[in-house]
Length: 190
Image (tube, rainbow, N blue to C red; front, side):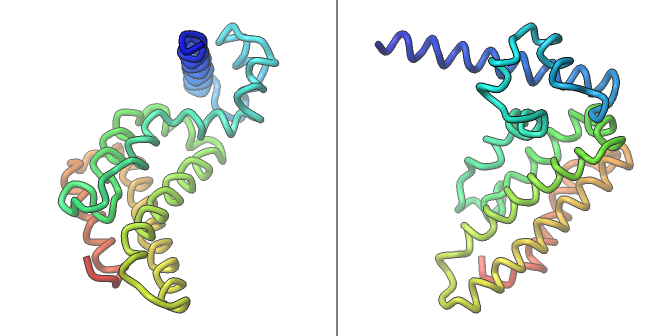
């Protein structure tokens, strides 16, 4: 029984990897908006039902297979130097810089907004999680949510502008800038 589950997990992982790679290659070749699900399944050499067993649409594939999302989500919350407020800023900047060609291809479509909003949601959730236990009352929780959204939005906008400028500023400098944004926007003590 365990062997079948492990095999299924490996098969699922392999299929998702094939679909993600197919989408990536197609985005680079013809742009996100021009890519169809048929293009993806043809490139990945999987059936339509296999695609729909894992994803509802290509947007879900784009977001669901951002291969570094786990590095953004599963971080220690008590290491301000490396993970301020639980956000893995180094990884966010490093990895998106590595994917600069793909990001530039996404600029030509509205999909960049989908990806950047997703990053902002992850960052805001981490900031709220980090600070939630330090506040009391509904008004303070609301304020924290506003501050977290503002900080996350600012970080993602800075990330986007940095990528538009070909990511020439060193990652460490950008991480320091993002930390200062978090310090200045979120008023709950560290």
